[in-house]
Length: 258
Image 1 (cartoon, rainbow, N blue to C red):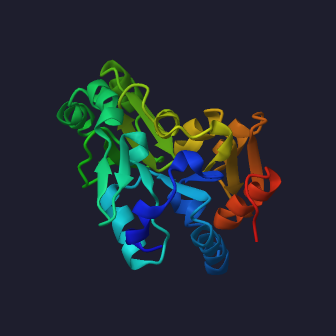
Image 2 (spheres, rainbow, N blue to C red; image 1 turned 90 degrees about the horizontal axis):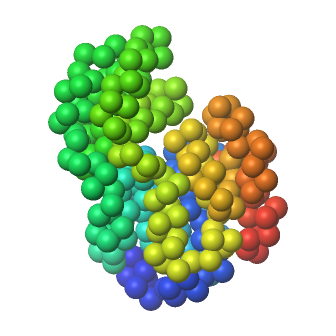
């Protein structure tokens, strides 16, 4: 979709269906043919389908992904593991929604420096080079990881998140993908039963648990599959990545599919 068309689309509250999807392993997962089938279906139905990216990735990555790799532009982005809530403008700028981020900033209390200082030298954590506004992120080596890191984060009155057994995120208390998605859905006036949350790793757990219709796509992290298995509103797909999303749309009867 051309960015020029974003302003001409109906309000999200008027769409028949909203896809709120993780990127890596989910929207970007599966074969090239499966991804193309999902992306083409979305683009052909932009008048009735809304698109929100809910990801650990930052806005810069998302802009490059959509400009350079043929991925549909979302209209909204929940990035940085839920600590960014933003709108996509016609020029491709991803601009935070201040009224939705005010609470996130208040919970974070400008904690980046004290987190980095407190976790400096903790075994099994390698600080990621990107500086985020309201989170600090590390690559995790499970062979050397010192669980004392969890206690340190708790003492700072912040939350930690381990996903795919290789990432360690420090987040504001009570902030993650699920709460931020629910906040955005309410802000947009979208009926919750029209939204499908899609994910594949433990950093997607909070949005699959938050009560919206959801799909855990095929080939998901086993720990995530185990956690969502008892939840009746979550469809555990057989198909991988993009194909798993379309499978869930059909099974849950959320929109006509190819």
